[in-house]
Length: 325
Image 1 (cartoon, rainbow, N blue to C red):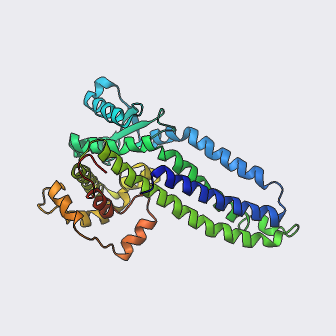
Image 2: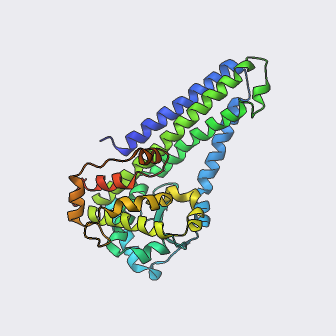
Image 3: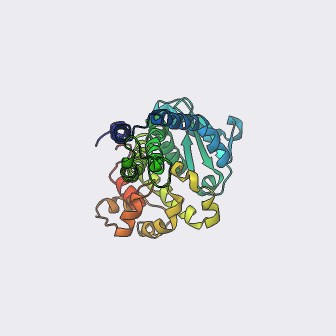
C-alpha cells in the first residue's frame, strides 16, 4: 500500500498540474494580463485562512484548553500516545458541544491541538477514548491537515475561474484578444472543478484509513477502535438534527461523518452479534471473513463524503491484528 504522504504528494502534483493547464489556456487564448496577480491573491487569501484557521475552529467548536490539574488522566493519555507517535505533546482542549466526537488541528505538529467533546467523554470508556485520540494524533503525525489545506485551494481557484469566464462574470463579455474563448475556458474550469473537488474528498477519506491504522500502531486494539466508531455513530444518530447542522462546516475534522450517522447505524448494528453495544474481537474476526457489498446509494454517498463508508472502514480494521497494521 502506498504511504499516505506519497498519495497526497501525487494528488498535489495532479491538482496543481490541472490548475497550471487551465491557467495556461487562459493566458494563451484570452490575453488577460492581470490574471496571474489575481491567482496569487487567491493563494494569499488561503494563506491567511491557514494562519487564522485554528482560531476559527476554536471559536466554532467552543474549545477551552485545560490544565493538567483539571484532567490529569487525559493529559497522561495524550502524553503517552504522543511519546509513542514521536511527536510533541499537543495542546489539549475540551469542546463544549454535546455531539460525541474528537478532532485535531493545527498548522504543524509543533502547533498541534487535540480536543475531545463533552459528549464523547460521557459516551466512551478510557480505552475507547484512547483509541480515538490515537487516531487524532496520527493526523498530526502525518501532517495531513496541511495537505488537505493545500489541496483545497485548487477547487476554489477553478470555481473562481469558472465564475469569471462564463456568463456570471465580466470576462465572458470581453471579445478582444481572444475573448471569444471565454465560455469554453469557463466550461473546462467547471469540469475540472468537479474533478478536483472529488479528488480532495478522496484525499480526505484515505487519511481517515491511515489515521485508524496509526491508532493501531500506537498499541490500541482494532476491536476497541471499532467499538469507539460504533458508539460515535450511535451517539451522533441520537443527536438532534439542529445540533448537527451547527457543526456542518467543520464535520470534516471529526472522527466520523456525523451527518451520515442515521444511515450508518443500521449497518453497524448487524455487526454487534450479541447486542452488547460493542464490537468485540470475535465479531471483528467474523467480519474479516465476510464480503461486504454496498448498495449503489451507499457508494454514491461515499464519493461525495469527507469520510469513508463506516462499514468499509470497520472492515479494514478487521484486517489488523493487535499492535500490527
